[in-house]
Image 1 (spheres, rainbow, N blue to C red):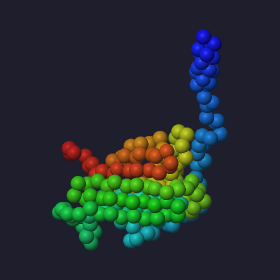
Image 2 (cartoon, helix red, strand yellow; image 1 turned 45 degrees about the horizontal axis):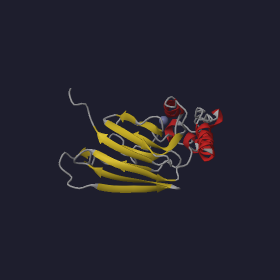
Image 3 (cartoon, rainbow, N blue to C red; image 1 turned 90 degrees about the vertical axis):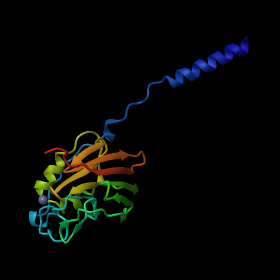
Image 4 (cartoon, helix red, strand yellow; image 1 turned 90 degrees about the horizontal axis):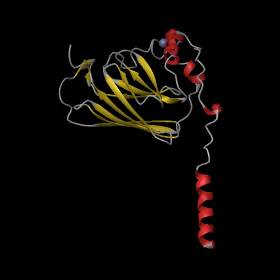
Length: 206
Ligand SMILES: [Zn+2]
């Protein structure tokens, strides 16, 4: 009897411990966005500047852009030759990657089916606001400032759409968004890495 009573008391203690309220996340860990302020001029801006010949602007494609280094991985779901859209089967997958500091991006693209599977792996870094502010003009930064909401800091990667010249940073509370003719599905892992499925989905009916 004594042993049973002892066991019951122990069980009660365990249950009481389990029922203890979980401390809520301290407010200080939540991300509060400080608007970016440009320290460059529009002619040197990555999006609006005089770099038209070095980037595939106008293509109906997207790229994965590192916002700290402005290195970019071109995802060629639509293929072009001398500026002209190739409307014929590719017959292959395209496997491309890039390394930016402590992280890397790997993309497996299927042009014939119109999608790309992209993994952003490694140790992603916080946004270096000084670097970002030196690559974009105030108009472009204002568009990015307007996108931040919620409690998560932005990732150091963004989707750049070459057709409509837009940038969209990856933010943890946005698991799906569209960018021009593309849908972007974002899966944020607990370790900070991100898996993306990018698919080409232009309007079906006109
Ligand atoms: Zn700009």
